Image (tube, rainbow, N blue to C red):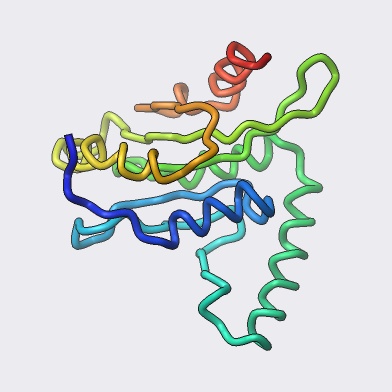
Length: 171
């Protein structure tokens, strides 16, 4: 079932920055206020800005600021980054998210990109229905996601629940 809601190009661009350059630890996506498209809500570095849309001087300054913020994120423990992500999930509204999940298996550091469908029990039925019917259009446009996580409460979205799912599927 499709809702007719389109995926904004900035969603794919932000995801590529998470996947390719690892500029972001996570990206949250939402359906726009007019219910016509899925857009980037926020990233691990704050509001998303497509650097291809700024002039060269401004781009250099923003890249330097992003690099410094990325280095600061890299110094934080994984659990602290994950908690920052979880705290951004709205209590009464649905969201989608991608998260670059770091974990250890057999003493080796690994990463998997997780796709979250956040649909809290407290969200309005219409909000849940729109997000459920639009999920696949976003999910299919994000090439490189390893696992899907569907969560209706913080326990299902917890670090431990996600780690357990990742370890079950890790080779």
